Length: 326
Image (cartoon, rainbow, N blue to C red; front, side, top):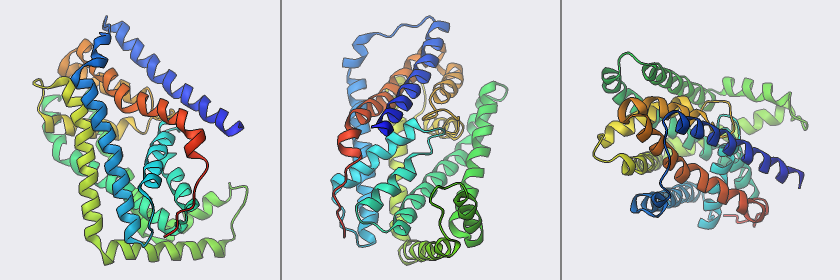
């Protein structure tokens, strides 16, 4: 019960920070939302796209687990995705999603080394796709906005994206580097692990990595393509709101670069940071009032709705697990 109270408190903080930033920008731009928007085709279609994204992510996870011989039900992979995103929404810099996903998979019968391999491989795919989009679009975007605060945000996004990608890759493939990281963090755990057990686990993880990365790289390539598809789908939700005022691929590039900055803001779910960075750059493109309208509706669809629903569902579906071993 105490853990649930902590989760509710984090949810409240995350929503409060996000709302405070949105209200501030609304005040600065003298904007009022038309409530009819929530019954519009754009809004409802945006919600439909979000549901489709969650379904694709659940299928991606099921396929990777099946590759390792785990016959996990789609309802379990859906639960993993839904509550993994939920923990990303309520933890600083959105870092809580992957630990929850690994924990959940271990509870339903997946070996921790396989679970870690799968989740971190997916994280590497995210870093690769975002970095690739950053490199492709950064020159075009910077040429359009050469001297502005948005310029600084975009450059920062590119550098952060590159740095995070390198660190994750090194921790994943370099045994010594990973060993130092795990031994360092082991000092802060209540139940400290013996060094020998840590080394054994690293060996198991390296074996799992070789199976996925070397024996069937096409599985990773296909999974990366599906992730890229979901990136485009997220951007299309935004595009629905600003259609005919910006090129779709241009918008994909801007959002990729801004997310490289926004998601490392040290607030629960990076709330406030996402709204601020989007508003600053989109104001230069659409104007202040249109920008805050777009950002607010986008966040309602992609952040508020899943966060509130997950908070309601978590006590029933996010804690108790039925073991589904393959």
